[in-house]
Image (cartoon, rainbow, N blue to C red; front, side):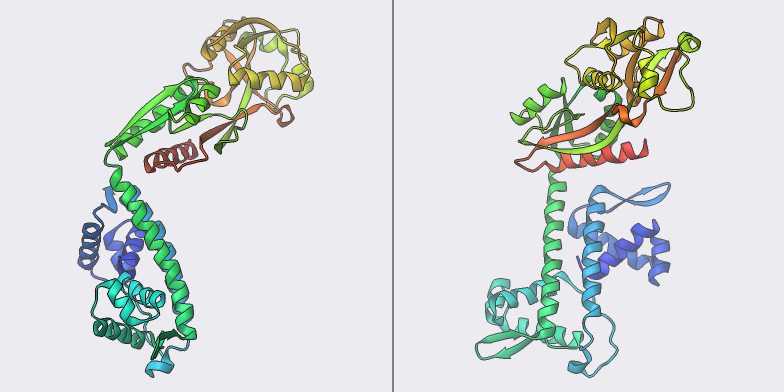
Length: 402
């Protein structure tokens, strides 16, 4: 990819249309169309998809546009640093040079070898041809990059600054080719993830269909279990990563937080007048303490949800009168709706299997520390596959929209 192609792609992505991008760049739309088609053919990918909203970047296109933006920023900075270009060519006001990846490889190969002949051998070029290419480039830049000496070449002050910047650009090119190769590998493959059943019921229907539409060649395997068992499976290499509610930190595991999910006190609507709880503010410790004689419906002790509820009750100074214990969060909610007692549930689960008809839901004051953190966990050793990273990126996008 050259600098011109990058600028065209950036403009199309910004404007969402080839026509609008051509007006912005003062170019013929057919020119942009031709350049875009050639670029996609060279890269072996589709950069854009056409939607009702206009031209939208594909996941591969997003990678190309992101890294291209970094390259363009660096090349722009290099252009501002060439105030002495005119000393070499006698031209004070020249247009900025539009870089080609090949030119960058030529210059950096000469820097590495210290001789044009050594660089030519590496590049499989004739020495006179490479020497002439560099002279023409230096003339266009307006200043010499190298001083020719008997023993080889020596960088000018201008050349040193320029080559330092071009090494950064070459690193971004290398990153781009690696990412594109990973996308090509995503034509097939498998993502294996672990998730607790209730959390999977809430989250996966929002994410898995969209992921499969975007990457139809990738298969999804889901392991459902409690958070502790899932982490053990992941450490043993049975699954790629887990999506869970954070409990405790394992030394061999890396954790990325998605968001905090606050808990609510859930009571029967029929008990509203008797309990006298405020409707327009978060419940404090003192207000919760008034419920210490109420019967509580709880989930079983091994579940993370129960551990958070126990923490809330401890902070409120309540020893609960537990009238019923169940493994099912939905069963607990329905028993509360039937008037059997009260419970606590996270906001994301309030409407999971059924609505909140017949229930009152009260938010809690922050000092009760009533929330759990939705987290992705993956092994510290080893890198997540591109498929896994794209799956997690889609989750973040979905949760942000939610």
